Length: 101
Image (cartoon, rainbow, N blue to C red; front, side):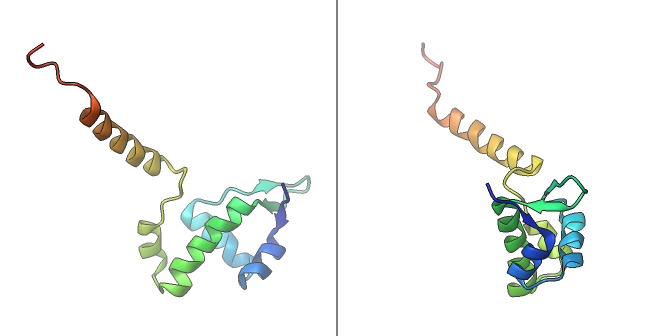
């Protein structure tokens, strides 16, 4: 898997490196790996998260706070809770009832 330095990612997205660091702090993700000198190393998944954030801010023209409310990374605790709620609801639908047994 190829990893990209912050400058490479910033160029791909047309943003400044400090902007990507700001988004990382504000949104709490992505969580890039760190190189031997502490430099950020982004995976393709990290870049995809940054593209989602960029879309909300630049295309949808949301404020940081509006975007943060809408942005739920796929692996966030909130996303896990959402999936668990859906699974519980589905289990209730498929479990046979015990009435009349």
